[in-house]
Length: 139
Image (tube, rainbow, N blue to C red; front, side, top):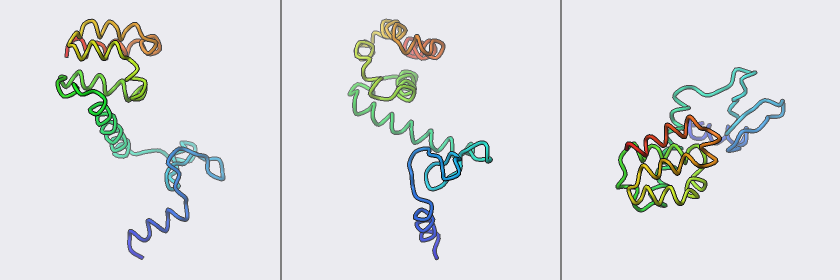
């Protein structure tokens, strides 16, 4: 059996579920039988965490590039701020910040940062919101 054949065979044996689930013994698992339950020594390696995070960031950046035609004009720090917000709350929720995004588009960064800090998001995660708003404010 080749490596590829083995992988396909193992996927059939284990099943493939793209979200966390409890296996037949009640242990948290993901994907093709990957144990992630701490009680049984499961989890992700630092390399796996970085791989997943890079994929997530790429997906959010692609979504932002598509949704915001003026995205390419932003500084790296402002792109980072919006990407971090999309990562935290989801792209759809970030795009509901219409006034903030309009102010950023118009290069009114101080007003955009102030507007961000009046949101429910800022009330829920105030320290993170302040740090993110400063990236928008100072570029």
